[in-house]
Image (cartoon, rainbow, N blue to C red):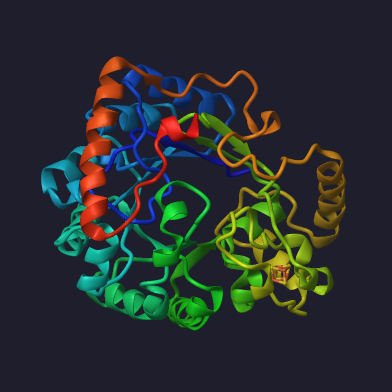
Length: 398
Ligand code: SF4
């Protein structure tokens, strides 16, 4: 299976998004501690690794760990705000290090909206330059976007504009805001959309991409808000294919092995035809309301077939619907008998979600602690200027 793991290489950032779900911590990585995690993915026969953060390009040894992962045979990807990739020499360094794919995060093509969401001016121009620089270095470029209250009504405008200006863009990923963690948790009213706020613009964006032969994935959106495109839901694809995802968080959560997506459903889900392959609302804290869900009655097997027969993913083995059904029933049975995560266990994953024998993720050093305290002070000022709350500190978590 095409499993891909995540390594948070830093947890600080040069932007200040009011809904950041992975804000600064005192944990830091050096090359050796990142290398251990890469080796772990190689041992597990993972297909690739995604270097993320915080803002991963702020790690001084990013090109080196990228080159190492590539030498071990991993497909290396990165999620970035594009700020440093706007510098052509940095884009060249990453291309030379073997970076195959970069996800550049852009929330809106409206400069005033992007500036408000990023907590600073001028980020859009740099992100646009990053797209062109990475493309010029032969790195595949995707767009990542967090769906939130401020961009919810014009997702389609953003897609059309980006494609018109950068026609080489072929894949888009949307992530619905996760209001259960970090800064997003304490600024829910400012940024959490209602699901109906983005339903139409998301549909228009996906239809435009589909008609133009481009591809896309959507994360954390219940299928009743994207029923025509259910096969493009990241969680549905993982549920159908039984894939796992390991995330090495650079915080106290450490390694989380996600095989169960902590779904929350409503009564209406009981009669929904997509119930068994839908991620529902996940464990989104109290940010979304189960009353926003409504059952659909489309053909589940048609969605499953679109996923298991996808020619773009030849690695999936069970391409016959009957064989898939038998395997899926077995997995559902296994899941039903597994221990459940207690409600309220928000920051510490339960033991069964930790990879057995996983290496320690990063370290807290006196220097890391000093940098963390300095970063907290500067971010507190940024939050005050923007009229936002700062996420709970590690002391408040302890
Ligand atoms: S009603 Fe429930 S199961 Fe059906 S698509 Fe919506 S969230 Fe998923």
